[in-house]
Amino acid sequence: MWDVIVLGGGAAGLYAGIEAARRGRRVLVIEGNRHPGEKIRISGGGRCNFTNLGISRATISERFLSENPRFALSALSRHPARAFLDRLEAAGIEWTEKALGQLFCAGSAREVVDWLVSDLRGAGAELRPSTTVGDVTRAEGGFAVATSGGTERAAKVIVALGGKPIPKMGATDRGLRIARAFGLPVVDTRAALVPLTFEGGLREEMAALAGASVEGAVRADGPAFADGLLFTHRGLSGPSVLQASSYWREGAPVEVDLAHGTDLADALAAQRQAGGRMGVATALARHMPERLAKAVIARAGIAGNLADQSNAKLSALERAARAWTVQPSGSEGYRTAEVMRGGVATDALDPRTLEARSVPGLHFVGEVVDVTGWLGGYNFQWAWASGWAAGQAV
Ligand SMILES: Cc1cc2nc3c(=O)[nH]c(=O)nc-3n(C[C@H](O)[C@H](O)[C@H](O)COP(=O)(O)OP(=O)(O)OC[C@H]3O[C@@H](n4cnc5c(N)ncnc54)[C@H](O)[C@@H]3O)c2cc1C
Image (cartoon, rainbow, N blue to C red; front, side, top):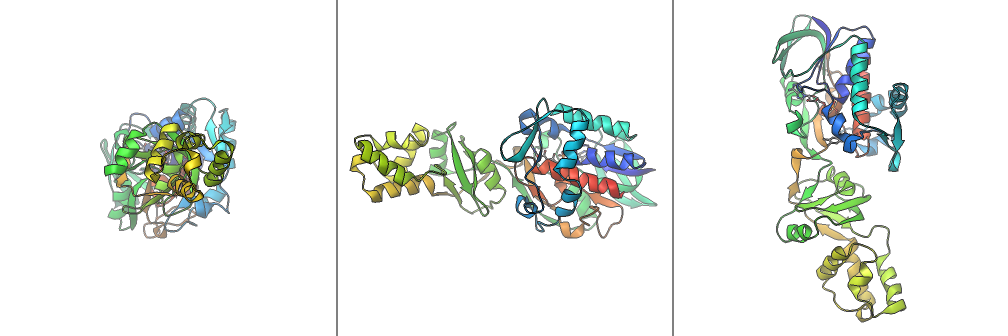
C-alpha cells in the first residue's frame, strides 16, 4: 500500500511526485513510456520553453483558457514562474529568454527531464516506467489502480495522465476515462495550438504558397495574435495560427492579416507618388514575400502598375491583404496538436489542492484538467504549478 500513486510521469506527474515524496510520503509514479517526460524532451524544438514571465494575476484569466479562467489562479500564484525558475537554476540548468517572456533551456530539454527524474528518485519516490495504467477504483483505505504489471493500492491518487495530443508518444484518454468513471464532469475536448486545414480552392491557394511565411496577425473567436504565419500544403501554421486555433470552433471563420502593423494603403499610395510605374506586385512585395504578394493581388482582382490604381483600388488591396477572412475545414488534430482544450471540469476540483470535490483523495493535475495555456511556456507552468499544489496536499 502506497501513500500516493501518481499516474503519468510527464511534467505534472514528476513534479507532483517530487513534492509528495519530499513531504515524506511513500510515492509510486507510473509511466507508460520507457522514458518519462517525453513531451518535455521534444518541447520547444528540443529546448523546452518551460515557463513564461508574462504570467501574473492580471493575465492569468486571459492567457489560460477554461470554462472557469480564474480556476488556475490559486496554483499559479502559489507556485509561480519564479519559483520554478529558482529550482531550475539551483539544479544548474542554464536558460535563455526569447520574445514575450518565453524562457527556454540554453542547452537541451533533456536536462530538465534528467533533473526532475533525479530529484524524484532523490526524494525517495519509485518511478515505474513501461507500465500502462488502466482503471482506478475505490478500495479499502483508498484506491486500487489496475496496471499492465498488476494492481497497486494507495491512500491517494494523483492523475497526471496528460491530454490526447500525439498518441504515438504515448498519449491516451485514460485520465478522462478515470474522471468519468468517478462521475466527474468532463468539458468537451479538442485539439488546440494546432495548424488549421482548408479544403477546395483555399487549400489550393495555400498549397501553392507552401513554405512562405510572414509576420501576420490571426484571430478566431478571441484576441488577435501577431506573430509568424506559415503557409503549408494543407493550410496555415506558425505561432499566430496555433494561438488563434485554441479559440477556433468548427464552422467558424478566421481573420488573417498578412501585413500586420503596416498601413498598406498609405504605404502603397506613397510608393505610387514616388514612382508610379512600378508594378503593383513589385510594390506589394516590399511588404511580404513576392509569391504571396502575387496571390493577394490576384485575389483582389488588381493588375497593372501602381499609377493605374485609384485610392479605392489600393484600399481594396489593403483589405485583401489585411482582412482576409477564411473558413478552415478543420485542424491537423491530435496528431500534431501541442495541447488539448477541455478536460476534467474545474467545477469538480478544489483549485487549491486539485482534489475532486466528490472523491476525497483523488487529484487531477496538468493537461487532463480543463485549463489550457497560450503558446509560450504557459502549459508547462500550469503542469508544474498544479503538480506542486497537489503534491503539497496529499
Ligand atoms: C510537440 C510539443 C511541444 C510542446 N512544447 C511546449 C513548450 O515549449 N512549452 C509549453 O509550455 N508546453 C509545450 N507543450 C505542451 C506540454 O508538453 C504539455 O502541456 C505538458 O507536457 C502537460 O504535462 P502533463 O504532465 O499534464 O502531461 P504529459 O507531459 O503529456 O504527461 C502525461 C504522461 O502520462 C503518460 N500516460 C498517458 N496515458 C497513460 C497510460 N494509460 N498509462 C501510463 N502512462 C500514461 C504519458 O506517456 C505521459 O508521459 C508541447 C507539446 C507538444 C506536443
